[in-house]
Each structure stands twice: as structure tokens, then as C-alpha cells.
Amino acid sequence: MTDIGRIEARKGFETLAEELREQMLDGRIAPGQVLNEREIVEKSGLSRGSVREAFRVLETEGLVSTRRGRHGGRVALQLDGDVLRRSLDLFIRGQQVPMSVLAETIQVFEPALAELAARHRSDEDIAVLEDLLEKLDRAADSPRFVRGNIQWHLAVARASHNPILASIYQVIGPDLLTPKPEGFANRQIRTDTINAQRRVLDAIIEQDCALARRRMEKHIIAYNQQLELKSA
Image (cartoon, rainbow, N blue to C red; front, side):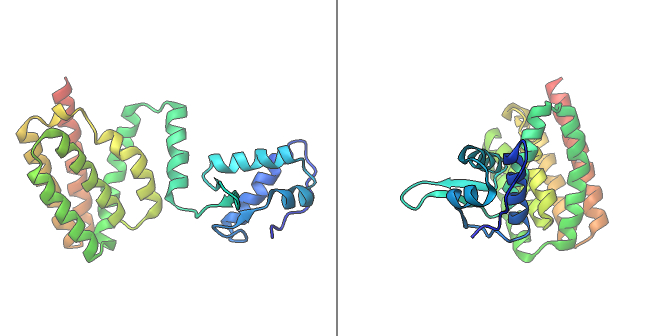
């Protein structure tokens, strides 16, 4: 049962969406709970169209999905990083944030993530990072190297165990770590990248937070400079 009272508002669907959103965030509406349209219409005093419009608002926010079939309807979703990632992606695209601003953001984020990874990493995190670095070293061509490079940096973000920062990084990181594969055609760039990431990983393993931050910052600055020279 959904705890909704009567709503009196010119844009009642916005008020309803706000109320349902708050109940999902504070746990009164649990993940997987069906939002009964008829019940909400009766309790809120809103039209069926207004209730459906509120559902559409929540669907765009990733809070509600539509389940098909005999027992279908709107269902509250588990809140996770996907909600934040979708919202941030829409903001970046809608505001047409320039690549230079995203690059500045990465230069701030990456060292902080490396520092947190050094502080919070688990043995499993280290095993994943080691495995990804070995695969990166064996990458036979530039496209594979690009994909492996992205996976390694995303693994560092996850090793930070900060879900907010990691989710933000998953939106902005891959775009900046995905130059044209030709940018890695130079074997020296690929070797330098692997060596730099090895040094970062060593600091994370040793849980030397300050060193991990410094090494990642140095790596990102050098990486950006190499790609700028390559594209010049």
C-alpha cells in the first residue's frame, strides 16, 4: 500500500512525483514494490493522466520501470549508481560540456580515486588490477589496448570504494580515455602508459595514499600531453 494523501496543486503530477521519490529514498517504498495506479489515483485525487505523468517523470530518473505482462505495472527500482550516472550523462550532453572541461575534471578525479584506492582497496581489488595490467601488456593491437586501458582505470575507481566518485567517473572517464586507436600506435606511448600504471598500482598495493595520488597525477598529465602531441 502506498501512503499518499490527497494532492491539491496546479501541477499535481510534479507534487506526486516528488512525494513518491521521497518515499523511495527513505525506504517507505521498497525496491520491487508495485505502484498501484488505481490506488494512487483514488488516494491523491489526481486524474489517471496526472498519475501516469508522475510515473513518466520517475522513469526518466531511473526510479521506476514498467513491468509488462499479466501482473505488470510500475515498479520501484533498486537505487544504485545507474541513477547518478544517467543524470550526469544527461547534464553533460544537455550543457554540451566541452572536452577541455571534462579533461580538467579527470585530472582532479583520477589522483583522488588512486588515493582512496590505496586507502580502501581489498585483496580482490588488487587481483583485478594486476590481471587487467597483465592483459594490457599483452594487448596485440591499439584498439585492444584502448579497451584494456579504460577497464584498468575503471577498476581503480571501483577500488576507491566511493560509490559517488566511482559512478561519476564511469560517465566521464571512458570518453576521455578513448582516443582514436591510432593514438596508441606508438609502442613507446603504450609502454610508458603501462609503466606508469605499474607504479600507481605498486603505491596502491603498499597503501601509500600520498604516493598513489602523486603518481596518478603525473601519469594523467603525461598521458594527456602525449595524446595532444599525437593529435597535433
